[in-house]
Length: 112
Image (cartoon, rainbow, N blue to C red; front, top):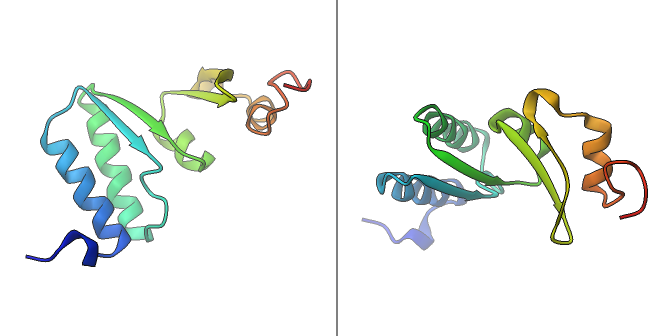
């Protein structure tokens, strides 16, 4: 057995996800789950999150990776300074409004 601290970042993430999923949570909070991991670990983590979603479990995904958010989410919400600036079902996302909200410009284009 190896100490967790000696594992690569990707293997540490896999271990953490495996530990949390082993608890069979009704809600999984995933904060930047693929930050700093390689492509193989990213694919593994995405597959696990999609499997959890397919089981009908709730996932709160926090990520700065817009591609990841849109690939894994049913609904997207952008928080800026503690306020929801934009939210939409994934199929209804308007990228221009989403980008403005990400920049803190408000979804309508005015200063937030």
